[in-house]
Image (cartoon, rainbow, N blue to C red; front, side):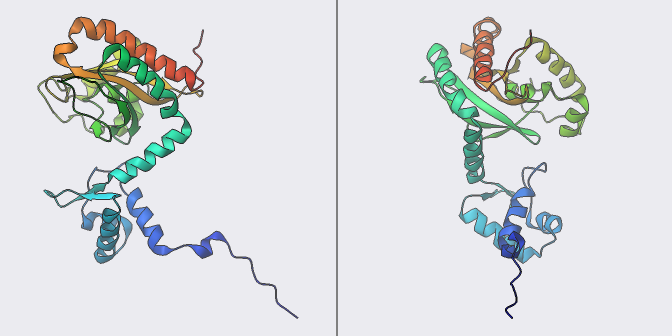
Length: 266
C-alpha cells in the first residue's frame, strides 16, 4: 500500500540566507539611518562574518551602501527604487505626476512628492525647474522632518504621542541658524500648520532655499504624502511664498487628493 506523501508548506521551501538578507534590510526600519557590522550582528543574532557577507552581497546589488567616512552601512538606492515602484502601484505617483507638471508650467520651480519613513521624509519623485539657478534635486533623499516643509506636513496631523515617539528628544538637530531645534516649539508650529493647511521651510535646512508643502490624502482621509515646491529664496520672497506659492501648493495637493478618492467634508 502506497503511503500518501504529506503536502509541503511554503515554510519547507524557505532559503535561510534569503531570510537573513531580508531581516538585515528590515533592521533599518525605525532605527538610525546607519549601522555598523557589530550593531547589526547583535540585532540579528548572527555571527559578524555572516553579517559582513550579507552586507557585501546587498552592497554589490545596490540595496546597501557603506559610508566611507564612518564605515557604517545604510539602505541603498535600489531600496528606494522598489519603494517607488510600490507607491506607483498604489497610484500616488501616477495621479500626482500630471498635477506636478501643471504646477511646473505655472511656476517653473522644483515640485516634489515625499512620504513619511520613520523619522524622515523621503522625496520619491519630482519635476524640476528649467532655471540657471535652481534648488539641488532632492529626489531619493531622506531628510529630517523638523527642518523641511514636507516633513512638518507629514506629521502635523499625527497625535502628539506619536509625534513624541518619532522625535523622542526635546533637542532637535540644527542645520542652519533658522532651524527649529526645540521640540515644544515645533509642536506649536505644527498646530499652525493644521490651521493653514500648509507648512514652510524658511531656509531651515539649507541657506538660500525656501519650501512650502501641503498634505495629500487618499479615500480613507489618511495623509499618504506631501506635495512641495522648493525654490531659491530670491525667487520665493514672503509675498510670493504666502500668496502665489501657497495657493499653488494647496490647490495642487487638493487635486491629487481628489484623484486618490479623497472627499472633503461639508
